[in-house]
Amino acid sequence: MTARDRDPAGGAADDLACDTAASWAEAIDLFRAAHRGDQLAGRMILDTTGDLRQLTEMLLQLVEVHLLDADDDALARFVTAAARCGPPPRYGSRPFAGHRPRRVP
Image (tube, rainbow, N blue to C red):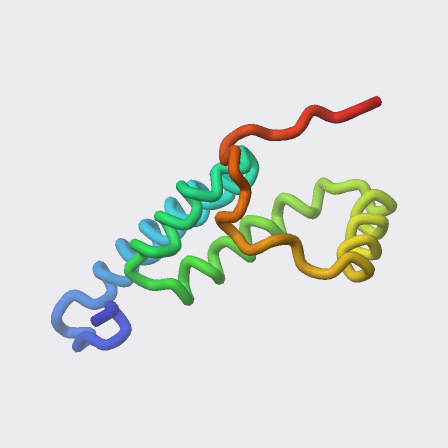
């Protein structure tokens, strides 16, 4: 049961604020895990969250804020390449989670 399901007179506003803060913290942890390439940690966050929908919304807000600082041309190239290539292998399929490939100049 989420805070939205509870009677507002029973402290639902406080519970909702706590749920929101928890989802925001989970979204930050999930973003960090994705940045590190740590799919196991990301999967654990997704599997254990109390509110997957709220976590997803918070993660999208976090990504949106991050993308505000992105180079428009680089972002356009990335989106074009992603559309052409299709989805990557299933989440969790990387054998060396946490190890990011080195960039070649």
